[in-house]
Length: 367
Ligand SMILES: [Zn+2]
Image (cartoon, rainbow, N blue to C red):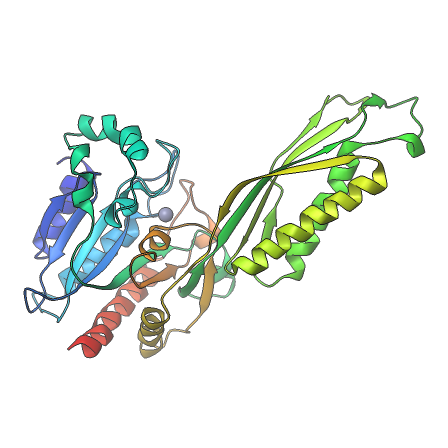
């Protein structure tokens, strides 16, 4: 073990955990329960990050898990605790996110194992043992602490927020086609300007999202051709990204947006085409565990603020196999995936206190 694994191993052992590394490079610290057959609460987040990142996305959730166990000073519950530092959540290296958490729920196919196999071997691990990374035995659920990575908690002057669901995502490639022509000699009424059609639609996308509660829709990329200042654009290719915690709301919004684009195209003498690139379902958090987390907040006299997560997290993978809950910590300035990413010490203390109360509530249920 080296680097972050070696540091975490030391901290985990100091807190009374038995430490191992599984075949995809997740570090796993096991803190036994009062009995050998006790079910397990998994607390985790990811160790990897993005280029030019900050110091808190992911790793904060792992360190908080270790610290929670350390604060128990040997106290045993009717459930065991496993703190997991997941590998490869961001998908930077292989273009596939959540490899670490997917291994825990046995959702790694042969092509993914082959993709990461060389790196796994180079690290001194055996890709043939990936199936053994699967979590076995009874679990009480999964808990993840994570920075919000957005401006909402700060705007409400709150330290913490309980995640209700991780939003589903639709991503499309779309294109308006018209006729490129001379910008000086083509009268306005005789044009088929693909970029003007695209501009009208982008504003319609914004209006649609503003009209829906917690709906976000983004055109983040546009490529107008031929791309000269004195030529009417003949084509405009764009991205569309739509997210919502309710899959019906999301697919309804996407359908209306694509339909609206057809109407704009028809009125302007353009053609419109679209291709769906991603249709990822939302991951609701578990009602029971989420309520327990909210109780823990209220017991500490923190406001019980519920919010969706617009970004994906390991919790959305774990939620496929077990009850999952998530607690967000305020992101100062709403900044993440940037060296200026930070947290406030008071918010980390609040998360820790809430985590301790959560464990107590869980023990009352299982004791
Ligand atoms: Zn993250």
